[in-house]
Amino acid sequence: MNNPYPKNKFTMPVTWLRMTEYTHDWLARCYGGKLSLYGKPILSIAHMPGVHRALQMEVFEDMQEVAPAQAVHTEPKDVLSMSAMRMDCLQNGCKVSPDAVVRMCGLSREQLGAFVPVECPRMALTAFGVLRPWSRTTAFGRVQSNELIRLLRGAFWQAVSDYEARLREDGELPDTAIELIEGFCKENGIGELYMEDLRREWQRKVARRQN
Image 1: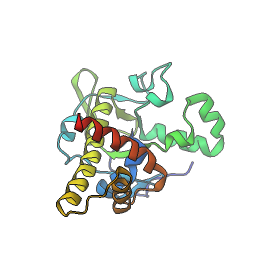
Image 2: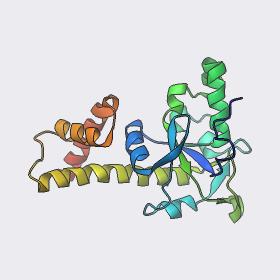
Image 3: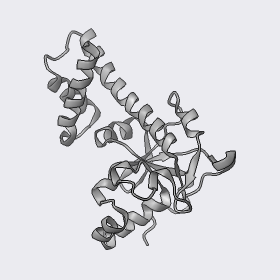
């Protein structure tokens, strides 16, 4: 099995979090470091407002217990987090037989691409209020995952709003949402693949803001 971790260099605890793909490039640009796993820079987000509290929420021991994020009958789209070890197993499984991974785990290589690695605290709050070292089998709990996703998505859309406000202040606000999103994507290195989804979501947000 190939080891994705640099020898004698990778020591930080990491858990994988499922984020909407159009946020990935922005997250990597703003919070990514030099270390990457499976082509995704590890995100250091503990300094963000609210994240420290979220990281102190109860986790679960992935691969050791049935957790809400991995429970039986859970749809792949509902899996919000997975441990470093589970991701390693699935990535290596995809190298051998992607079809078998889909059949046994319900997650394709493309769906695995929706997860981003997040640097975690040294200690994790497990069941019954027990503090234990964050390990390679530790993953975010469902409540914790939802809160982190909410905070990161909120930061992303705040960045779009700040970009809009800056253009307005400079008298350079474009006429359409398409042009606004195109400019934001170009400035932040976001690929064209997600531009249409971004534009639709931004238009919904603008419409709600105006009502």
